[in-house]
Image (tube, rainbow, N blue to C red):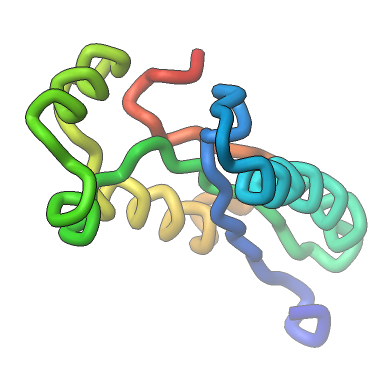
Length: 121
């Protein structure tokens, strides 16, 4: 990217550290560190016209989650917490990742962009 004189790094975080969820200190610590890494790398790499952003997913329902964890009660509770009243899916994360990777976001860097249906606000 330095040789090209431009580029984009898109990190993937998690909103779990913003909620202060218990029971997973290692995961929470790692994901909160991604937010700091995003901001510091943006500062360090900006001089090379390299942008660094982070997409921060909320609960994104996947086939694996449907099989292992999702119950009608958990789905109802999650939807009640969100402003957007539907379960979010992988495509809801893919679109902002593609945006931050593209030249359409050429003025964006050091951002932690939350995609959680409006839970963290």
